Length: 273
Length: 273
Image (tube, rainbow over all chains, first blue to last red; front, side, top):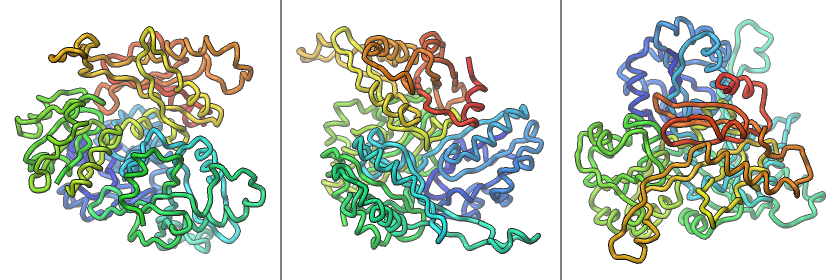
C-alpha cells in the first residue's frame, strides 16, 4: 500500500492522527521537501514519529518514481508531503503510477495554503483562480499571473498568489557535469512578489484604459507567513507598502484582495499596517 | 484561549495531533455540526478524545456566541469544526468576536473540501470560484451559481459545487411558536444538484447563443462522496448521467470540469462510469 500523507502547514504536530498511525507502521517513509517546507525539519519529524529513518525525496527521486513504489504491493510505503497530498502535480502523477502498477493507494488529507488562507478572514468562496509567481531572472520575466489576477479582480474575486520556492536546484554550471552541485535554497518574499507586480503594472499602465478594478500600487493586499505555526504573521496594506513589510522566515504568501465584504474588511483591519 | 480546531473530512482520526492535544486539555469543547458532518458522530469523537462531555453547538448558540466565549480569557475553550475552521463565514465571525473581547484565539487548520477535492486528480490551480447549490423549493429557485460556473468554464476553469445541507432547520410551522420543532436533516445528492443544473440549462438554452464552453447535458462532471473516509467514492461522467449515479451516504460534492489537461483526463478516466 502507498500512503500519500499531508503534513499540514505548521510543524511536526500538524500531521493527522490517521497520518501518524500510517507513518508509524510503514516499512519505508519518504519526505518530500522541494515543493514546500514546514517550520521544522526532518529531525523534528523523526523525533515526533519515534523513528530515525526518514528518507528525503528530491524531485528526481519522486518524478522517477520506481524507488518509491518498489515492493509497495506487499510493503507499506508512506510518502509525506507538506500541506495536502495533491497540492503539486507531481503527486497525482505518483498516485497514477501506483494505480497503473496495481498498487493500492491511500490519500490522507491535510490543510494546504489553498484553504488555510481563510485565516485572513477572506471568504474562500470569494477567491478566483490561484496563481504562482516565479522568481524572475534577467532574461526570463513571465507575467501571465498578472492577467489572471486582473481576471479575478474584474469579477470582484480575491487572488491567492503562491510564491516561488527553489530547493535543491542544480547550478547552471553543474548541469553539464557528472557531479551535480546545488544552489542554496531560496524562498520568494512578499516584498519580491510585490516588487515584480509593481514592475508589471508600470509596463502595462499605458495600454490599460479602464481604471476600475485594475491592479495598482494602492490595491489592498494581505501578506501571510508561516501559516499554521505558532509565529504565523499576517499584514494587510497596499501593494506599494508591501515591498517594505518584514514578514520573517519562509514561507510567505500574498493575497490580492478583490471586492471586500464589510466583515472581511473588519477582519483584515485588525492586522493592517 | 479560544481554539478553533478543524476536524478534517473523514472520521475521528482526521484531527491533527496539535488539535487533539488542545481538545484533551480544554475546559469546554463545542462541536459544530450544522455546516458539515463527518462520517462518524459525537460518540465516536468522544471515545477517541477520551472525554464524554462534548457540547453540540447549533447555529443559534454559535451565532449568538456569548456562551462559547464565556470565561475564555481565563479558561481554554475548544470549538470543533468539520473541515477547516474558516470554511464557513460564521467561524471567522466567532474569531472576530473573540478578538474584540480580548480573548486570544488560536486556529488549528485541517483539510477542507476546498483543497481535498484535489483527490479527483484535477489541479487545484485550475479551479475558479467555488459555488454553493441550495435546495430549491417550489417558490425559491435561485440560479446565480449557474452564471459563476459559466464564468469559470469560459476561462477553462473547473468549478467545485458545494451541495446544500440542512441540519436542525426549524419547521416553518414552529417559527411562530415558543417551542421550536426541527425538520429531519437533509443532504443534497449529486443527483439533485445535476437535476437542478439541467433544469437551468433547459430554461436558459434559447438565450444562449455561443455553443463554445457552455454547460450542457454532455458536460464532464465528477462526483465525490465521503472524501477522506475509507469508503470515499469518485465517479466521472456526463451531467446528464450524473442524475442517476448512486454515491451512497452524505456528504456529496460535484465538480464541473473545465478544460482538462491530459494528465487530469487520464486520472478521471480511472473512475469513469
